[in-house]
Length: 195
Image 1 (cartoon, one colour):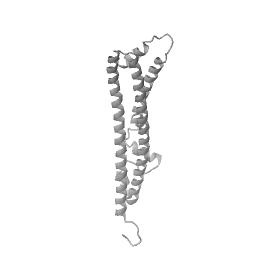
Image 2 (tube, helix red, strand yellow):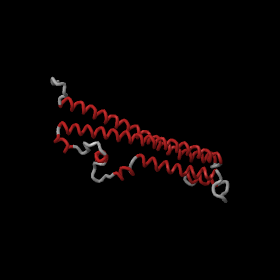
Image 3 (tube, one colour):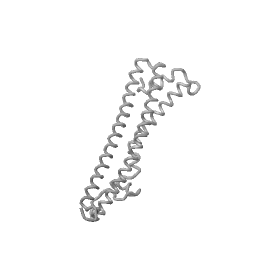
Image 4 (cartoon, rainbow, N blue to C red):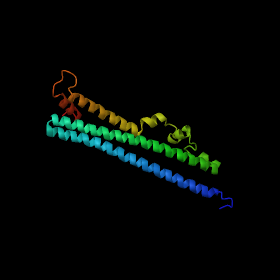
């Protein structure tokens, strides 16, 4: 080490690379956790549809089936909401990791100013730099980033579950006047594919 206790450029590059790999590992761990949670939720939704058909056949779509469906959809909505919250938290974590990696790229550029032209992601930690890192392909925009996101998928599934649950509860509570007592069972049959 030099006598003035300054860090050599090669040691600085090693330290930056270690931090970069640490951020990449943390980002990867977060993404893997989110994908597993999303898969668990979608599997639960799929299994619930199958269970509705089986319980419907066993109960002949009577009041027991209606109660089962309301409880099941309430649980699905809870799990979906918690999944959506975790996806949101994971997105915030990912945003922090991207900012950190952009800062590290800026440090690489300080070490070697000519290296910047080889980066496809940004070396700036401002909003524009983060957007460039997330949407570095020319055809990708923030709009496609949002609408094609995992959060949007979970939000849509949650909305469908919430809508079905609201309809089931409204029917169970009496719903619009003029409906017969079998209207909930009729709605339940539609949920199971028109049995």
